[in-house]
Amino acid sequence: MRWLCILFPQLALDAVLRSRDDPTAPLALLSGPPQRRVLQAVNESARAQGLRSGQSLTQARTLLESFDTVEHDPAQTEYWQQFLASWAYGFSGHVSLDFPRTLLLEVASSLRLFGPWPELEQRLRAELQALGFQHRLVLAPNPLAARVLANVADGLAVDELALPAELQRLPVARSGLPGELIESLQRMGLRRLQQVLELPRDGLAKRFPPQLLAHLDQLQGHHPLALSCYQPPDHFRQRIEFNFDVESNTSLLFPLRRLIGDLATFLAGRDCGVQRFVLQLEHRRQPASEVSVGLLGAERDGERLFELARGRLERLELAAPVQALTLLAEDLPRFVPAAAELFSNRPQQSQNWLQVCERLRARLGDKVVQPLAAVDEHRPERSWLAQERGDAAARPAGPRPGWLLAEPVLLNDLFPRVLAGPERIESGWWDGDDVRRDYYLIETRDGRRAWAFHAAGHPGPFWVHGWFA
Image (cartoon, rainbow, N blue to C red; front, side, top):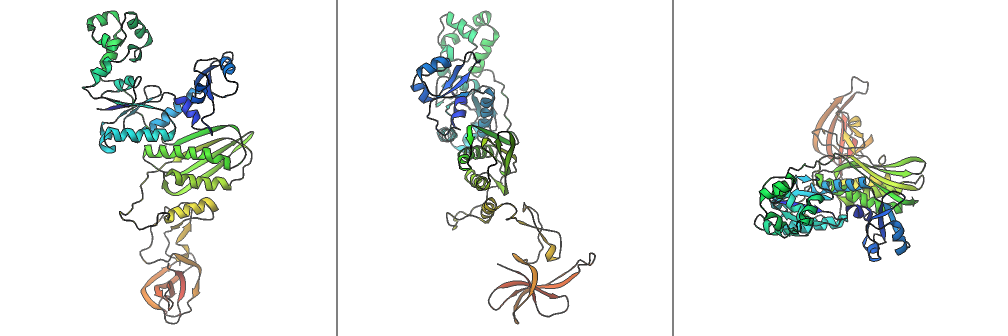
């Protein structure tokens, strides 16, 4: 087995920075009681100006007069670890969240799918960088060794043969043991894990709790470490709270793009698509506004989802300044990528018909552009229905025009050419709207193809009921 450890050294800080317009401005996360506010974490620009984790807020103000502060929220840190687990689920079916700020992935089978370790490592780093999270990656034969080695290394990949040497070089203080055991070992003059491993097991068993030997055995792979297995949720919900009132739709586009990007990442990890999601715009002292985005089919391309959401958001007139934006997606059906030909001659910038319809719906509204669904009815006038989703329909076996006229019109052509037919339609005697017609596919003298009929059993002038493209 091969276990990959992804350690996020500043997960809470990265989660805040990725939602800010200017992540380079000095920023500090605060924690502690109101009487003693302490800097939990600081970004690079704040660190460059003398701020450090653990400083009191008063001391930090004496060093740097102006910098942004955000309250540290452990629940948000937990949320982002869950989000990253959903992303990692796209690379491995066994993802563990048992260690804080850490993902453990079993990737032995993933290496066969995504390529050798250098290729997979490069892809993981690129995606994590795009998501905005700093990280360390370590590959090892067992999960505990991968997690412990991530304390002192980044980009390390070891197998069973190289693992003992890497463990022996490990400082006791970074071995993952509890603090009291580390203190006891250091009081004995043991600084490296090699010194501990060279001691007789009987002596260690007498002087230390069983926890020490169990940890050493799991670290060397002698005993397995039981890990829980992450299961992705069946919905997506993410909220961005602003530290100021947003009064224009344009200012909402940056956080919207971030939300849509995270939704696309979640969908890719879960291997599904989204067919409907809702944007909730929270206001002060009044109910939230909602923007519903529905698609004709499941989709998970981030750019396409953003363009659809953007079209609807730009048409919205804000009822009041916005304080927070939430994206909620509960309709997550199976996603089937569109089949493409190997040598496609479609122009690069062209779009398929479904994409054009969705763009029109986003611009003009759902009620203006609606798909047609077939209805189980022989009479042409009643055989279709406009509805929000076009996922119905068994169509009749005979030819049907793309443009069905609201009322049949007399054909102004004395000698049309009959291409197919007749197809008799006789129905409706039970509801007083009896129809008895013989339908034909005809071609007029100017080359147009029509769906025309005359009364059943009584040849006469043709009445055009629809046109073919």
